[in-house]
Length: 499
Ligand code: AMP
Ligand code: ZN
Image (cartoon, rainbow, N blue to C red; front, side, top):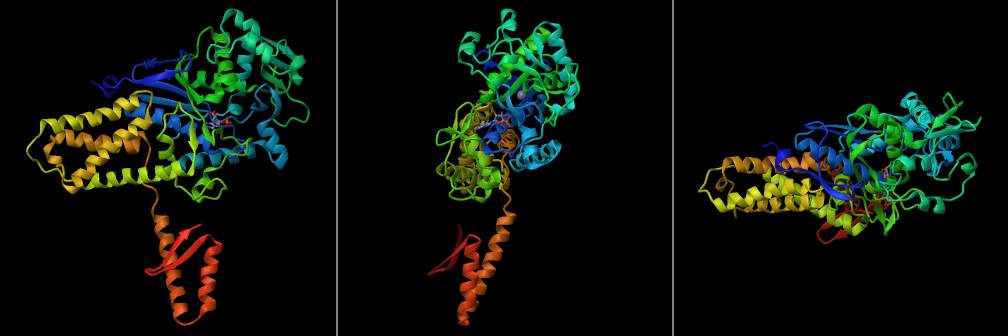
């Protein structure tokens, strides 16, 4: 039996509001689309959490033996400041403010995004298409919806006719919103007079003469609406119906609801079998977001250079911290939680180190022990197959870590297990830590270098003191303090801490 048959994946589907057994459309293959970043600013830690959730889905399905095509787009046009089709395009605005070409903004932040994800050890997607690279396909979809009578043109812009669509299909099936409520609660906005109803959304927006990002279209110069790109690119690379579509929970409405409407309206069928949404990273209970001013960048987290941080934490500690909670719960950031994660991460990596040095020497077998260890391996898979529960997966890894420590001190012997079970234990212990959870040893070499250099300075300062050159010894102490290195003289010599 293959791993995927032995441990069938169950996942919570936002569309049906149920945990369901995952069945891929094509045997052994999975198509997954995840909404990528809008590249007008640096990614913050909240964004990282969402992409981590899908990095785990990608890694675990691959570990089970699926061939996964993972498409994650880059939004480089069309995402307006306000979700209700109002305000400036985020990228155009940044380009205007910084007096740069929009594509300079896009390049800068796409590069930054890739750097951050590689620091956190993410697997790159199979395809990373951009909205501006698919303008032709987006225009075709707008035309198709116009031809089907589900869209209308006003003054060079094209809007999706939600009320008309709702008569034939069910608008709101993903988010649970209904059109009457939306009609009552929606705000009246400037472009309201162009729309037949305020629930309608833009498929194509006319570009004013000052608008930098513009393309020719049958309706005049303009740019695509935000929801269009994901419908077009997912269809192009994964087909009209594909397996998994993901994103942060804040994208359920309007973005994903509108994606469904566009696909159903154009092709008469649902685009996605399983919708997955990850919950938010919060700070003191509030969503981490740039506009609320409570976000911090990964670089600040590594260096500790932020008011909310007591000190810096490495990327693997942060990754571990995020994996300790299930993706569907909110995760609140705190120094205490990161400190605890650091201890947990170090314990796990110690266990890995121990496992590498173990020697298998056949000994008298114990059926009970054999069964216990097989259960431990089983737990790894069962937990991850249960809606990608990394929190429980880590708990199972810690059981194995305790066993590794027992092997180390001689309380248990590897040879009591069959060779086959011992090999499977080590293979999956490593497999889950490295391949499934994507953890790795933090780069210790730079820490060692800093330690070495500071030790040399401490020694120089002692020599200066011994030679009564107090001006020099004080200067060494003060200069180090200025860069955040605090020297503490004690009975056992001088130690340092990083401020
Ligand atoms: P954006 O670049 O704003 O389109 O966001 C990229 C992704 O990050 C989307 O899937 C958002 O849902 C997600 N996201 C934004 N803020 C947070 C947060 N505080 N916690 C988790 N995910 C977030
Ligand atoms: Zn999207």
